[in-house]
Amino acid sequence: MKYFDIFTSIEDVHQEWNGSHNVKDEEVLFAVYTYEEYSGSAFLIYERDGVLYEVHDAHCSCNGLENWNPEKTSWAALKMRDFKGYGREADAYLDSLVKAK
Image (cartoon, rainbow, N blue to C red; front, top):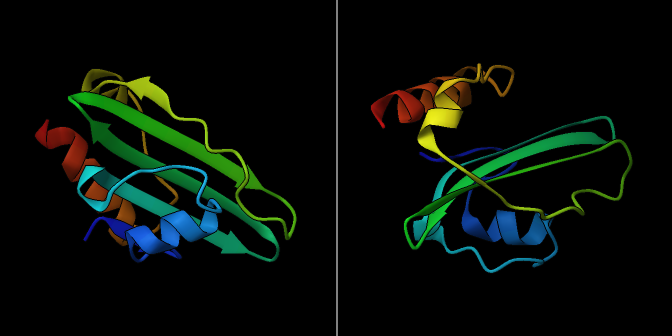
């Protein structure tokens, strides 16, 4: 499973970011969106044409996700980070994904 918390499919990703992107399911490697009391945080990793991207977004209102700003990244850059706080399953999946590359 590559979708976690509120994200359960590519359709959720499109809906929560109001269709502001054209990422396909087969490009998504990891996606999580946590939400509690009108605030949320999302993180997504996808690969397109051999280029790795990450998207971070957060909000503290009921407006939801509004900032689809992909940034190029690399597996080496991702390996230098400590990804924790997305929940036990998401953290374990992301950790194993990054370590495998």
